Structure formats: C-alpha cells, structure tokens
Length: 154
Image (cartoon, rainbow, N blue to C red; front, side, top):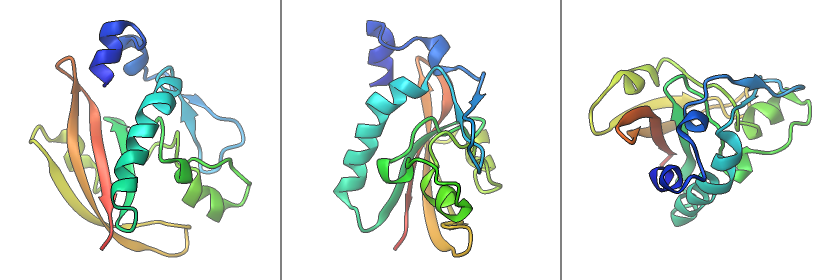
C-alpha cells in the first residue's frame, strides 16, 4: 500500500521518512506530528482497524512505528482527543507518541524476518497487562522505515 502510494504520487519518500517531528501542543504525554501523519491517518489507520476487527478480543494494538519509535497513527480507540487527565491520555492518546521501550530496541536493530517480545503494557499508567508483540520490519522501496507491530494479549 505504501509503495503504491509512492509510485502514484499520493505519498512522497520525503513525507514517509520525515524525521522533523513537530510537537502537538497540550499533549501530556508528549505527542508529535510529521509530514507522514495525514497520509497514515487516511491509509494505515483503516488497515489497522481491519486487522483489529479480525480478532478484537485478543488484538490490542496494530501500528507502524518508525526506527525512532514514532507512531504516526494508532487505532481509533487509541487516538482519542486528550482530556488533560494523564491516566486517560496515557491510555487513549497514543497516536503521535514516541514509544521506544527497552523491549523495542532489539526489534529496531534486527534485520530478521520478524521478532517477538513479551512485556508489561502501561495501560492507564496505574495497571498493567502482559502483552505479546510481533515486529515485522518495514522496508519501503528497499529502505528500512521501521516496523509493523501487532500486540495481543491472551
């Protein structure tokens, strides 16, 4: 999908690999936007939603994360408007966040076909879930952008 958009001109490589992240005012935890964000919202988010809908009880997150941990878009349920309540915003305002926990670093460094990890998910900032995450490297036109990630809990 991403390579097709580059080929037809609806997405540029410059926008895809834009690392000039601009802060979104009023975000706590901090969130950012890039030239990729609008395209990702229109194209990646529906793809993520379809995957989540295939197994909604176990799949908790579907995302593409850059090599620096930037999540340009998340599932709709995790892309809510901030309220100022840190517990709510930590749990439900994950679009635009930079999340690169220690568990993510080996996947970002790996060139394997996929990696898996088990970790505690922060949830609302007070409670945690045991999660499993599958990372698949995303190479767009031969260049590593980051990873497609699918998180689930059983």
